[in-house]
Length: 523
Ligand code: GDP
Image 1 (tube, helix red, strand yellow):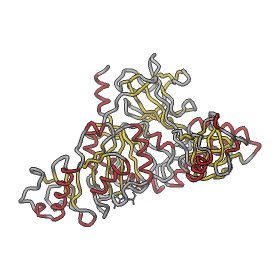
Image 2 (cartoon, protein in one colour):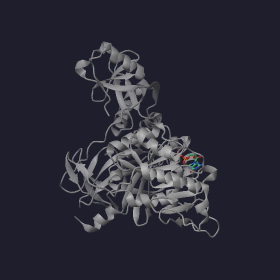
Image 3 (cartoon, rainbow, N blue to C red):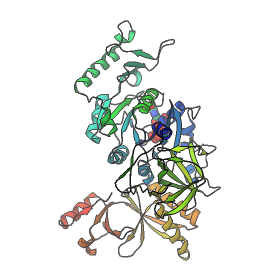
């Protein structure tokens, strides 16, 4: 073990923001980047979203749709810590990339619109985070607007997500009447609009504002005191161990748009969120993040980030050791050596050559087709293989065929490579062997179609089969007569049979008809 390396690792905070579209993820990300000094004015991140991002070299489809196709990485220094934010597309059209990105972080920040509460996409993403057991920090956003009762919002965490919410601060008023935050954790009031010459913070004495402060008479403040008492009586008590185990989520209120409560949130986050910890390798061994030998895994591959260069970048989450340029590593899947000459790290929008990267950091490797999603790489003699990344059951399906039947070869080549890369899931019709693609978001299909044309010169015809519920059946239970148009029988790329049900109703009907057959949702 090397002390210098261990000290560096301790400064790393690597997280992703999960939220439903429009909850304010982009806005809060931008405020965090402002606090970190990465950008100087608000609007930079926003502009990328609306497609006006002048220096953007992202792929065309992304510009056209004004959204981020695949998750990007942002990093900055804050109070002696190195923060890595792994962005996940906030758009409805999210993809498997979004899920996989959650495999590469040590914590998640959940942004909730306080007028809307927990929305469907947040629920889906939370489910993945929960399976990993990593800590989740909640930011109840848009306090400058009238929203739902704070007590209600905290209760919903438990009711809908099954995680205990513990308030770190509490709103004093909301919307038009918002006065500030009662900061339980730091025992102070944070004023929304301090008067000129007034300090932003009023320290609390015994949990109260000193009597001579005008705030003491404020009716909103009085209400808040009442709610704080309620919380003290019935609310959850902050328990750091439970937070780190992902069983309790600290709840922060604020308004990303008006930059209120964001800094308070960031300071607590940096303080409470975990530094990178051990990873499981080779089945059941523990690998310490300050192990001398470099290792990491590929959690995403992004092609054509720069259309002029037709490059592919493999995103590697560093798990141990230190990355340096020219490092020789072994690709665990093939046992072959690879020299890591060409790597980038990510500072907001620009790419710079990697200076140093340790556990928790993300490096982007220029890839000429060596890497696949889930690949492990390691330096040194001891083989290090990380667990396979989970596959996420697709919900949308398309029939796909080459437009030009004379171009079968390029069609098959592109298809194979993109499927291997994990861009989409491939199925074959059980009877006809027709190709069927599955994805968790519509956008994956569009990226697939675009890349087939641009990288493999193969135009594809796609017909939607729509939303389907995928359920696997044991081969011994299968009778091909069980299939119909409402429960399409297909096989996955390993040849396992599964049904694509039109809806939950069709699945129930199947269960009623074949009560002895067990179907599984293979995650
Ligand atoms: P994303 O889809 O989660 O990235 O959401 P955005 O950050 O793009 O925000 C969606 C909309 O909500 C935008 O119009 C933002 O200006 C607005 N918004 C974000 N945060 C706040 C907030 O704190 N208060 C108010 N009133 N609006 C906000």
